[in-house]
Image (cartoon, rainbow, N blue to C red):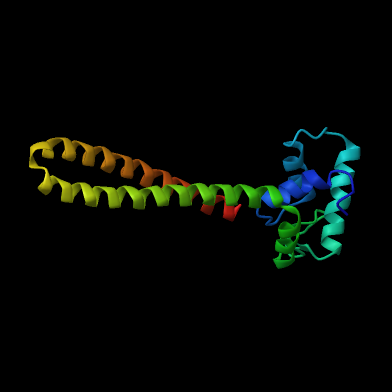
Length: 163
């Protein structure tokens, strides 16, 4: 199946969206966004792939919502198997994003430990206490920036996981 025309583009759509009550035209609109020429041959290729995915159990036909020869498709658990097999890009991106999050979290721990040591040094070196406090303030500012980045990455991971 992966050798069929427009398989890569349709796979990208299936990897990027939750399929609920989609018609062929919905798939086609998303495929066209990937710079695929808007012509009948490409539309038919996408249609054949959708039918094949439904026949092989990756998509369910929603008979209650399908009317007047307009078939509506929903994803099912088997589509997750498809995504595991063919959605390398999105998994790689999630791994990179998660790796970046771990890097920030590691730096957060390092900075917090550094602040603890600086607090101890204030008592040992009272003559440079002001400078130590300034350095602590810089470290606290960096921690706040990193916490914002971690929260943003968590939001992005959650958003990408739902798509």
